[in-house]
Length: 368
Image (cartoon, rainbow, N blue to C red):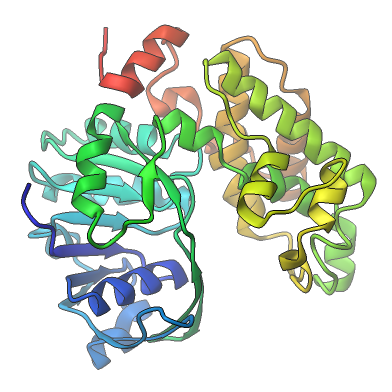
């Protein structure tokens, strides 16, 4: 297999900057793309990014090969295109890249949220993209990071293992092999339904934000989000959301991790119930709530995570009353129809598929 040395990172937020700097410090050729030239002006002027990293991690000045706002330039000789943008921007990125992609390129969504790869594939098709690309999504972002300035980023940690799945899953081994030198942390995540339905942000972010709406607006987020925001009643709602998500996965033949299992796996936090497990996670202490309800925990996680989970449940006969209630609450508070804006099954290109047809599509690409 051809050695991978040329990466393009799409997106210059904290995650995109962390990824671009990390790859460059590993000695790889990195192009950084952002749609808004002003957002990367300082990086272009300096020729790279200052990375302040955790103990033992790559750090220092990361010189980039190219910084651009031209999608043709971003795609022209990239072997891997890492898309590190809010999932609500995935369709726009797909439309932008579609005319410029070529056979053999690998596109990875970091992360896909729920249905990301399916939506990206559908948009490429609608744009008439004939390039045979390998498309994959990660279950979550590899980096815990933050921007320290226009050309500076700090990485607090790299996750030890991040599930990744290609669409179809028969391509996952090839994608993992291509990334293994730069990213040994990626592991086989099954199918994109596995990565999408193990999306814990869908459970922890929107409901916790919306059920603390009054407090967020009155204090501007001056309270501990998970410690003070997760009361026994709120935890019961989170638990019911989680039960519905796991049941939707089961209807598709998928054994999804529960929130309790995820807390144990990710943080070694456990308890008698979800309330205790969340409060037994010391890493949550000190994390402030969002300062406003106009936050990605609502405007991204509701349409790009909860809507597709609910849509799958409705299509395949699972009651999703609690998920639906959180979506409706978000629609009311934001005065936005997230059902229309979100990832419906039509947008994913799977509205007419039976369970067996959907599983064949994500496993081996079979379409009838």
